[in-house]
Figure 1: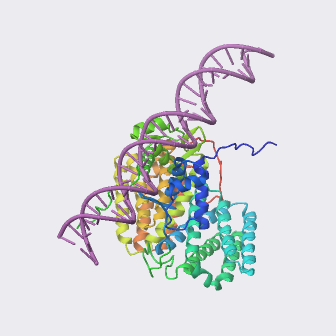
Figure 2: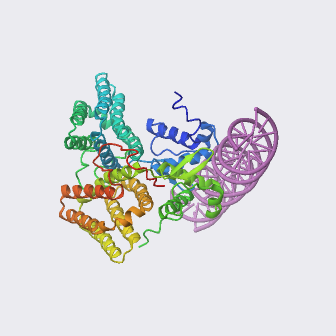
Figure 3: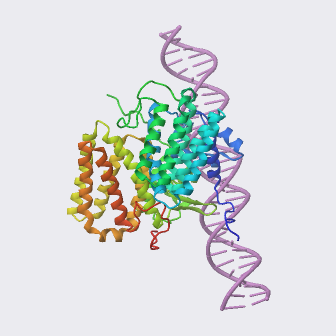
Length: 241
Length: 241
DNA sequence: ACTCCTCGGATTGTTGACAATCATACGACT
DNA sequence: AGTCGTATGATTGTCAACAATCCGAGGAGT
């Protein structure tokens, strides 16, 4: 009857602004290294500097902004080692999510959601739309994590997926030229869904891990997920900023 | 020579206050459900409400505080399902950390750090000091994560370990009465170190996973990590708050 | 030409005051 | 008695002004 009409205002101003800032970083409106001028942003959001600063502090604690005292807040710069770090963390989070999903009863429903995303990937591929392809790819992983039903995994993944997008934008050149990998990527996703449907946990996790490893290989060849802890400033000095 | 004298002020006020708030939540000075009155806290920190609010927004985005508009900020209440959620997320994060450590060259150094923690656990056990025992236990896991060298894993783990402590405080009764498990716990940790020293990744990960599973069993029997996704409001309605 | 100093503009950090909302107690009405 | 409406106090949300700091330009001195 009168369900889900509960939320009146409930969302704080800082939360709204924070979300918009995240979106701006995600879409590239705020590229890495950008300083966030308080006065300008405040007037753009039609609020005072107070609520804006509160919102920005949220992104600082999420690791999307870095704060330099008396100097300002900047969108983080991704260094080469971060590619590995991000994908390593994503691998952990998504593995946990997959584990929870494959052990649940809704795995078939989830599999269908994932199918949709992969279908969208294939479509985007046929239309030569690399942006849509990445979007669909990430939607796949978002759906997987959301399906896990874990607030904490979802929160961690949100930041990681934004950072993933930042990586992809920064390495766009490397990525679009590496265009031969699309079939492989679609196949990998499909195999994952297959294992999920079959309830084959071991295969599912192995495939997922391999998938993440392939992804990091495509982005930063040489930085394997299997290559020991914290490669740090590894290979070439490609500045991802 | 003149190393590590670089940081002059560099840490923002919000960061300092946020840390203190985290500590207060960790130690139980701010129990779950507590409302954080701004005026009182501000005067206690000797700052205005502005910086305090910024700090609190950080904890909100970390999930340690929950915000109700026009009503205030409260320390989160842990519901029964959260025990599973927290340990499931921790399992993922620590697994990733362990993977990175076992593949690195410093595994022996790390193993020694972990040995210290386990030794402290044994000492605490002999002195019948359950608080020190848990502290040492958590120090073990903190050391493991820090050794991974991943900023992101460390950030995620920080929150999770605080929430773990909240669980332990809330379930103190269940825990101290379950006092028979100490030997088992020490043994589990030692086996983990052993596998790490041996460089046996498969064993290490299996042991770690089993260890986390045992932990959740001790705290919330019936909620297995192997029991499907999102048990949610599972068994008895034990209010962890 | 180079370095150092100084000064001005601009930006961030902090504060206290004001507006809006909530919670509680009290009283009127059915 | 019970319920609804109202007023009051307290708390949160927002703002604009003030203080502190940083950055760059310009000039004096070597």
